[in-house]
Image (cartoon, rainbow, N blue to C red):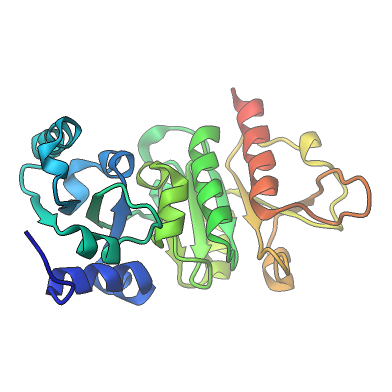
Amino acid sequence: MITSTNNNQIKNIIALNKKARERRAQRLFVVEGIRGVAEVPGDFLHAIYYVEGFGDSEEGQKFLSEIHSKAPQVTCEEVARTVFNSMSDTVTPQGVLALVKMQDFTLEDVLGGSTGRPAHVIILESLQDPGNMGTIVRTAEGAGATGIIMNSTTVDIYSPKVVRSTMGSIFRVPHIVAPDLGETIKTLEDKYGVSVYAAHLKGEKFYTELDFKGDTAFMIGNEGNGLTDEMADLATSYLKIPMEGQLESLNASVAASLLMYETHRQRY
């Protein structure tokens, strides 16, 4: 049993929780909770940590048995309660935590890969709120989106709050960080024939009037500032979302959800 916060493994988990730089360097991130860890594909589990006494309960024995069945290579470490609380990112830890390997996706994966489906992509420019990011990832799975592209100034998709709010969708929705988002958008349009839409005040048609049955991508901008002019100018077309009252825009995750589910409605 690990009984000290000075243990190097514990120090490393705390660093991974706090620092995106460490997550990127090690290609590892933290998943907490029984349900969250259960969602992780076996091949991507790196290590499991559980609070003292958890392995003695019927629930704990069943959970650890299932983990061993799908990931026999993974070590499971028992941790003293005070130590576990220090390494957890949640106020009320469930007593289970995993280190998970990042998945490596390609642009082709994000576009649908071998699924045979038309591309259905969400492009994020400098989105900052972890809740918005998590909601978009989760909704992307529900609406059948093929993937997500984001720039490097978007909130880290592997941060603890984002991972929790995706409810496991992070493992099933292909996603990439584009070193140059503008160039990636041009590649989508010029090489792959994807129609890239931006919700914009200059849009002439409502999103319900447009055809999203073909390869489609939607750009979603920063919560406070929206899309930069540089990114908006790259759109194949502008669209607009109906607004009543004095609003000019919706919450980023709400706007993304409307567009994703309209695409789903048209295709299915």
